[in-house]
Amino acid sequence: MSERTERTKSLIKSIADADAAERQASGRSDIPVGTSGNPSTQVLTVANVITFCRLALTIVFLFLFATGSNRAAALVCYVVAAATDFLDGQVARRTQTVSWLGKIMDPIMDRVLLFTGVLGLLIVGELPLWVPVFVIGRDVYLAVGGLILQRYRRRPIDVAYVGKAATALLMFGFCDLLLGLPVIPGLGLVDAVWLPGLNDQASALGILFVYAGVICSLITAVVYTAEGVRIVRSRHDGEDGAK
Image (cartoon, rainbow, N blue to C red; front, top):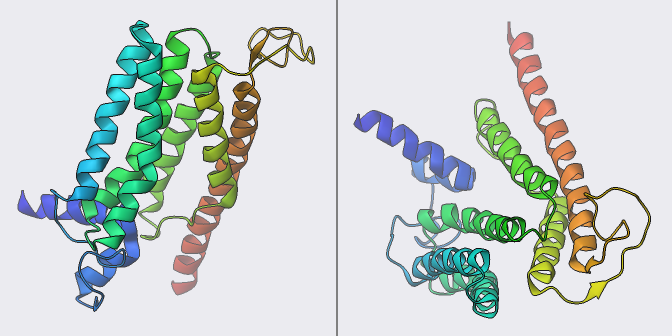
């Protein structure tokens, strides 16, 4: 049981930061503990508390927004949660309290924040169903692909700039849709009911940023898939050459 637990811990560390995990496992890390290159095993740090507060705020936001209890309060919760995305990382680095838990939770919280915004808009009928299906489905696809690639290379695929652009566009678009301002008339470019803003239906300006984010997300999935296939093929070619 302990061996399986240790393997699980090693896998999680490798996913969070393969280079740091390898240095720690081999005892080659001469970087101070608590820095990005040598995370600690601490759990109760100021940065981690901020991260968990973000989680609590997103849950409160989704409840208030979906039930229509208080849209203004819901938006405040969402904005504060989004704003502290930058804060916890800065606190961890400046106080030298970077931890494995923080490295794992930070990207997870980014997706949780994104998904709760999407689900909230879907529940109140301000976002077509295909957008959350695509956004969540793409992330699940990439997560599964990343786990499969762990068999061939411990270090995750480097983050593509188009992926960062996709996240920024989606976050801005969803935040604007949550605010609901400014409202623009439908552009009338298409006659599809599932494309508000591009058809004759008026929508918040943010929907156009969401569409741009979806396009960038699709490009990101293609780029990561191509890189994953290249890694697998190079590994197989290396094994064939060694025979």
